[in-house]
Every structure is written in C-alpha cells, then in structure tokens.
Length: 283
Length: 283
Image (cartoon, rainbow over all chains, first blue to last red):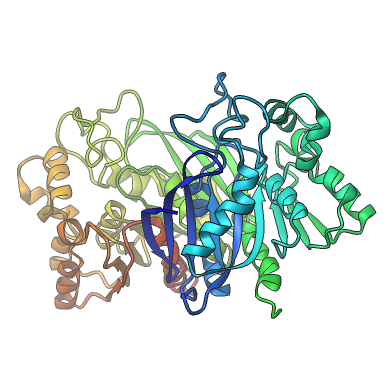
C-alpha cells in the first residue's frame, strides 16, 4: 500500500505526521495523522491509541486541539487519528448538506444502503484496514487502545466492545451512548442501514452491552454543561446496562464542562494514563 | 466600557472566555480571549501573560492550539490574547488581499499613513487600552508579562523593550527580530509608516536594543527547521546586539522544530515558568 507523507512537524521530541493513502475498503483516498513519540523506533515499536473524532471533524481537530502530546510522549504511546468519513470527488454527501450525516459523519459503521455502501465502510476501515497499514509502516505494535469524542465516542465504544481481542481498553469523551434512540443516530442509521432497526443494534453501545461478554475497562468523561447531553448523548443508559452486565465501566460527570476540546484537553492526560496501564503492561 | 461575552468554556478548572468591545483607539469593535485560572478571584487577582499572535491569526489560534492551560492553571497565571489587527466593515485591508499586510497583520505598531492610521493603532491598543480594560473587568493584576509568535514575537519584543515599567519579562517564539531589514517588515512598515525609515526603528527590536536600557529578562525559542528562519526572522541579529548591550537575552535554537503551534506547545510550559518566576515573585 502506498503512503504519501503530506506534512510533518516535530513536537515534544516526537513527530506529528499526516499521510494520504488509497483505501480499498472505502474506495477513495483517505488522510490520517499519527503522533510518534521519540521512543518509537523500528527496534523498539510502541503501543498505540486510536482516536475517533466527532461530527464535522477530520484527522486534524484532535491533533491540533487536544493537547495530548506532552503526556503521550512521556508515556511512549503513539496516537493514530483517521478521518471521520470517506472523502473525495466520488463520495456521496447528504444532498441537503447537513453536518450530521454524509461527509464528516460516517458514524464508524458499514453502510448497507445505496448510494452509501460503496464508500461508507468506516467500521471495517478502523477495525481492519487502518491498523494493518499502521503496523506495516510505522514502529507501532498491535497493542491497541481506542478512544473518541461524541460520534467518535460512539465509534470507540462499539468498536471496542465488539472486538475485545483487538483492543486493551476503551475510553470516550461525551459519547453518543445509545444512538438508536436519539436524533443524530436515528437519522444516520436510517440512511446508512435502512429501515430495519434490528440491523442498527450492532452499532449501539447500549444494545451491544446487553449481550456482550467484554471485560475491557471502559472510562467515560461527560461534562454536565454539555448542550447535547440530554437529547443526544444519554450516558446513564450506558451506566445502567454496564452495571447489570458487570462491565467495568466508569462514568465521570465533570461539573461545568461542555462538549468542546477545552473539556477534552483537561482530561486527556488521565485518559492516556488509563490506557497506558494496559498498553504498557507486561504480557 | 461595555464588554460582550461571546463564549465561555471551562478548562483545567478555570475558564476560557471570548469578549467583544468597542475600541476607542482602533475605532472598531474588537474581540479578545482570556484564560482565567481557578485561582483568580476578585479577592485574589492573578498576574497575566499577554500573548501576541502571528500573521493571519486571531484571538483563537493560541487558545486552541498552544496547550498552555495545564501549566497556566497550575501556576495561577491568566492569559490574554488580543486579535492581530483591527477588524470589521470599515477597516481597510490590503487591496491585493495578501496575508502579510492589512487585516490579520497589524504588526503591533501605530500607523501614521492613510488610509491605515484611523484603525491600525495596535501598539497603543496592546500597551494601554487593552490592559486598562482587562484590569478593570477581570480578577487580573497589573503585573504583566508579554510573549508572542512570529509577528507577535516582534510585537512582544518591541513592546516589552519600550515599556520595561509595564512588564516583568518578555518571551518569543520564532520572532521577526529585525523587521526593518526583512521582506515582511519592509512591506508592512512602508505602508503603515511611510518611506522615512527613521520612523521604523521604534518598531524594530534590534534597533531598539542598540539604545535600550532595559534589563528585563528575554527568552527566545527558535526552531532550526523553520522555513522563515533565514529570510524573515534573523534571531542572531538580536543575540548580537543583546550581548553588546548586556541585555539578559537567551536564544535557544531548537533542533528539528518548525514555525507551527506544534513547536509552541512543546515549549510553552517552559515559557510560562520563565514568566512565573517574575510574575509570582514577592515584590
């Protein structure tokens, strides 16, 4: 697979780099970003946190605004951030141009409906194609954690819960916890997956946990001044099912914090330490 | 003076807020941003770092990308970031629409030429009007440090050197050290100040240090992979005159770093500690 380096900048002794490649799964060219700590060398590869961003984002939002590199450099953890949807000339967008569906809003699922299914296969891209590419081309191991924000929090939860053998830990900021019951999720799932709601459940963290055997540790931070909390996010539904199923999930309601990257930068260091406890543990 | 609060977000226990106000000096409405640490209360105001940004920036670039709040919260230092030029409908811009002159490129000077002089008075705005507004409306003291990046590094150096009674310390990332001799400075100064180059020298850090009595400590970080280093920035000219004049200036050439906020976020914590040593010292 051909990788084109688009940019690189030294940061905290390591490197932030952006790459473009052709995705066979998504049938388009994709961009991703990687933070490589100084400690990452071909003779000593490092574990990795995959970060999934929210609606309207690209690979850049987290890398520019989350203030994560100080701690990641100190711990010796790489960070990989994909885009939030397929992109490019041939990729269909919401004809109404809304922000919460189509480009920038792939919802980390595999679409089954026309005209979306040719490109909108973000689940397979994040779970399979991207890690394969990363592990073949960078000093990064297959010891992976997954985290995300909002729509990307939904992505991290559902991908982590469905693939406990591929990740060691899961965390989320302000995730869409129960998308099949909220406006953002209903709109996107109806378009991407069709009217049969039984096909939606595999992309809903609450529905998955009802039947999940995962014992991966899950950390969720949620600001109580987040304007999307009541209508779109619903973290209590996740806590309720996790308690019932004895999943080791911790929800921290953070007083006064909103939905922005100012919230994320405040607690990203603690999330990195949470993941490091598993990523850096001796097997 | 009326202040309109445009946004607020909790971060590291403190607050990031944006405000709009009418500037009498600039003859337009201006926006600025402030970080207030948790420690700042009306009964216990905190000292402040004024940050001046570079070409094309607004109040947002530093606040979103510099990763400064963890350390500022820990130290108990406020940060104030003005815009980089006057703004708004009535404010003239470069008719050719270049990025390095006009809107977003005020160069922290007081223009004397038409049509610029009515609005482009950023020197007086930063030195006088903005601190007066800040100290009257926020739990922030008159103990001030000043720092900046690129064009804003030039601003921090020249404003700090000319006003040693108003600031306790100066720092800069990748500053335009000797603007009267480089393309960015020559273009802007010719438009704002006219052809008489003797009027330019009061806005050139190297020229000012030739005659300055300042003993303020100055810290400069410069990446050696910065594409603007040779043509526009010229930090060695600053070191040479500082040595001659026995000004306590430290230039740190940082290997491999470029001109971006990835460079700034790597070393902003050390700059905050440098300023804190003076800002938090007992009088």
